Length: 474
Ligand SMILES: [Zn+2]
Image (cartoon, rainbow, N blue to C red; front, top):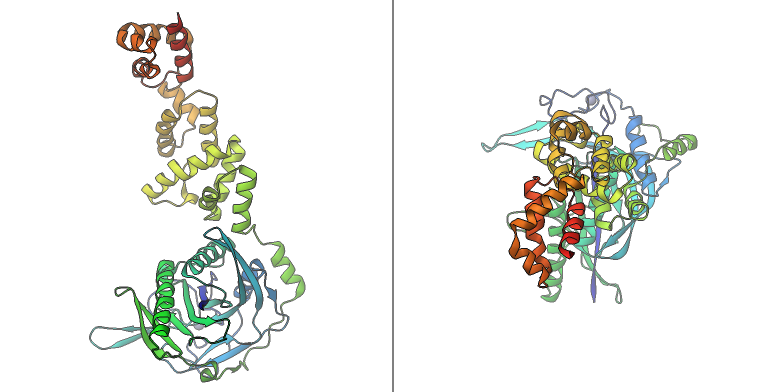
């Protein structure tokens, strides 16, 4: 029986101000070839200098993934010729990575899955070739030399669903750590799975296939699922297979051969003679560890245990650190976690999507939302009225109590006023009264509806019900 063995390499652009080995600005959308200098263009006589912030961000990520931090890490030259690589080598790491041997624990389809992280290391990005329809090609070097973190797993995944969950969790983690936007659609995070099948009883395996050109987590999932099925079919049909790189074709929903895979030897790695080995000081590493935020999976688990939220709701609320912070501040303000969760995931997210704002730009503070929830709990307004108050808070920045007072939205709990309306409703609905007394309990709805209409929904529904029942008993 052949089982899939899938490993994943992720490249994430780090959020530094400058490039990996020079002081060129790391920014997007700049004039082509404007952020370049002798170092990142590989001009003779230029010397690279290591970006400390990039090293710190990789150590931060490695520690969050439970990795060891190397005490002596070296940069290597990975030699190959390509127009987007002006030095004809890329500075990368080889057998002495910055961080190594971590783990990510996942839950996939209700099952625990343990993925070993082989390494998280540092390298520089390449430039970009742009091929025009007229046959000309352009090279853009702004991206060349940007710091890139590579996170490599062991081939521990056995399904496309596991790979998808890993990428979702890694993306969330990188964003929490503030080390990368991890946006695959913008190329700030790129994932390249390797797929083969192995018969664990006989030790036989199909050749490893690497898949490229994956622009979304969904594409990675679909490509891995396709490749597992393709290799199974090839095994059954006795088709020859070889170690190769394949490209995901989104339109065909299939992988196609891109090139026969180079082995590591083809790249001729050798130590970068222009850079000294890195020796991250133990005190520095410990300071980085001490500054780590609560990681998203731990926070999600805490939201379930501390606030009694469902696993799903806790996942939505911890998808971004900012949303999780907002939610917790709202809970502090009103004490009702369940209601806060519903409001944040419901009306608040809806409004953010509608207005295309991020939670940092939300005009309603967590304290104000907490106040609104408290006002509902006190019985001053109903949930329905609160849903009308919320957009007004959004638009005016006013406190909920101000809006309720100014617009006279508070519920009528004055029982003499409600009693008068109930009497009126009973008189106006003789058939409902007769039906109710004849045993049709639902008939009472017509009487309730009458009172609520008369008060435009502002009567306290509990007071109304109690009064109607009392009156009908007489
Ligand atoms: Zn530069």
